[in-house]
Image (cartoon, rainbow, N blue to C red):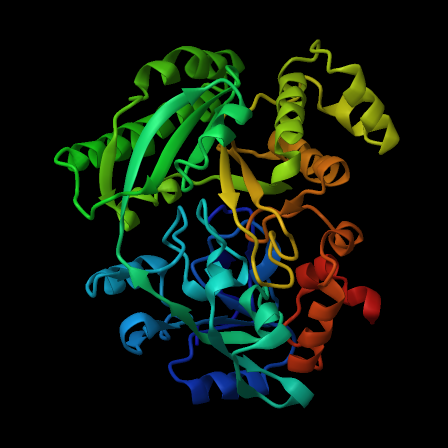
Amino acid sequence: MSPAKHRVVNFGRNVQFRPRQFVAPKSEDELLELIASAKGCVRAVGSRHAWNDGIRTDATLIAMRHFDYVRIEGEGNDRYVVVGAGCQIKRLLAELNKHGLTTPSVGLITEQTIAGATATATHGSGKSSLSHYIQAMRVACKPDGKATIREISSGEELQAGRCSLGCLGVVVDVSLPVVPQYFVEESFVRCETIDQVLAMEQETPLQLAFLSPHTWTFYNQRRRVARENARSGYAAAYRMYWFLGLDILFHLILKLCVSVLRSRRMTRFFFRQFVPRTLLLGWKVVDRSDRMLVTKHELFRHLEIEVFVPRSQLTAATEFVIEVLKAADDQAYQVSQDLVARFAEHDLGDAFELLRGSFTHHYPICYRRVLPDDTLISMTAGSDQDWYAISFITYTQPRDAFLAPGEFLARSMFHLFGARIHWEKWFPLDSDIVNQQYPKLGRFREICNEFDSNGAFRNEFISRTMGFAEEA
């Protein structure tokens, strides 16, 4: 047990708190004893790579770092992996690769623990989220006030557990299917519109695209499973170009513009003149999936909000985003009359006017296609169509100038396009909107109450966003 009032800080450094006790149990018995004796809110923490108050508690915080095992079980096509809650995804991928295997979905970031990643429906591009693939899981919970470990393997309980935000209890381990290791072919192309990006989707279903601010054109990272598991001869050079040129140099220059010089003019120049001259377009490379599908996005501290839009609304939503960010950058920019009318319809006009000229966006806006999930409350749950995740990121300090447009985009895109917000990212919405976004949220709360009859695993953030406070 750590000293009392240990200060906990998340990756983005926008969440800080001091739990009464910060504990890392080493066995299941120790975990159950801890839950049974805990007074006040109990929350679990992984790599702290989230930007909201999901882990916050003034009572008991549990780190599952000792539960980091990886066990491959079954035979042939029925093989699966049992992963301890505290195992980081990068360790899981490395262990699976030793056996020529990998996970069905791979996200951009591998620093997260498996429990944290699945509890918030972490995703890659072109597949469902990692949560969708969970076959079974074990959760230390507190039904009827008694601590126990329950195994979940089917039905609505599994749908709830796959993306639970820690509301059912503390995840002990999860079971996931595995697939043979595969290689990915990748190349960068420039597109003028989001419709051009979408037209390439059938040929390169794993692609992700970046909307470059201030030119408002797309750079599409076209990706598909390679025909052969053979690495290109220059793949190592390509990875080095990405690591040194984009993961490091790009971010250093960007931070110079926005955090040191604080120059909006230099930021515009950077994206209009520098970025187009540094991207290597048309270079086709093949490498292993866990090399090609991940980045070192965690090297530089930032804050992020991610908005999910149904595919049918994507073109209109993209046009909307561009207009809003142009107006935020230039007070004199005039948005379309149609947009003005829609703002008035949803009482968004005053909030929009406050944004004018207040913020110059300074990071590529990432677009990723995410297939529907078999869950109750993940961002693509309960849908018969694909969704697109649109990520907005800031590297400025302080972040006040980013928070206002971030919240405006979250609220306005819900009203206009039925958008949802990623549970792992900065989350400015309350239950008044969340209740409308997720038709099965009521059933999710019922299952949570069955696993946690006294609400021991709910903090203020969970109660506010999930609507538990309304039921009390």
